Image (cartoon, rainbow, N blue to C red):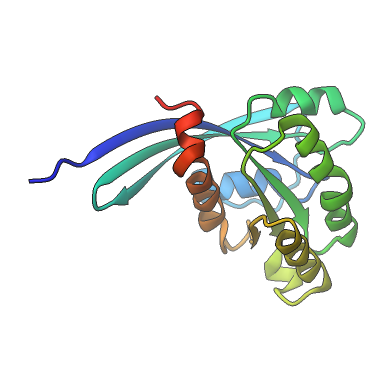
Amino acid sequence: MSIIQSRRFIKKIALVGDSSVGKTSLIRRFVIDVFDDKYIATIGTKVSKRDIEYKSPDRTVFLTLMMWDILGQKEYKKMRTQGMSGAHGVVIVADLNRPDTVESAEGFWLPEVNESLGTAPLMIIGNKVDVAGKDSAAAKRLTGLGASIKMPVMLCSAKTGENVEAAFRTLGEMMISGEYAEKKGVL
């Protein structure tokens, strides 16, 4: 008879990106499966949590994701840096309907995350794919960026829920897999 091992992790994820790209909406869809069209600006940082379970034949992993929704105003660097501090993973969010947010993901957010956190697992989400489409210029640019820096890119819709669960689960797997999990915050 084999014994199934179980492990428990608590991981902090920081969501960053320009204002109104859908960071809060993505978190709400993932945590409580709700979408609201009303825009509410994030002031400072808001923290939400969700538990996920990963099962394999010989082990079960319980992961608590602490999602930090960090304001998107570029002029508040100190507040953003404090919000990202200690993050085990980062999601850079861009709005596929606004090409400037895709440019910003590459030219502003990626360098800032690398400067603040170094080698933490990182993912890019192109949000609002339900409106822009998977073949939009913005979607192609994001997937090209991801391929060039070997980083996963997920095209999602907080409104319909498309790929939202898959995106957060993928980042969760990146944070708990292999060598990284052995070095960081095992409970």
